Image 1 (tube, rainbow, N blue to C red):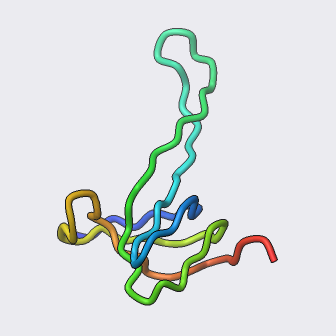
Image 2: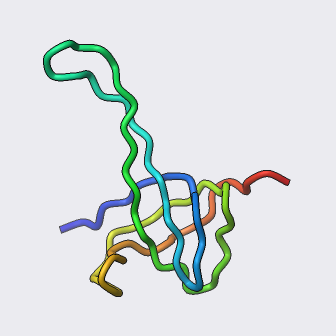
Length: 81
C-alpha cells in the first residue's frame, strides 16, 4: 500500500517536530454552503529544516511518538523573508 503524501503550511515548530495545517473547502451536507476546514498533523523533522510559514510535503510513516505519524519529505516554499 502506498504511503499518503500531503502538502501544507507549517504553523508551529518544536525540537524535531513541526505542526502542519492542511486547509480544505467542503460543502455543508445540508445547506451546501462552502465551509473552510483545517486539519493539523504533527510531523517528524529530523534535520529541523522547516520553519514557521514554510510550505512542506509530508508523508505517512509508522508512529514515531504518541501524536507523530507523518515525516517531512521536503520544504517546497520558504515562509516570510
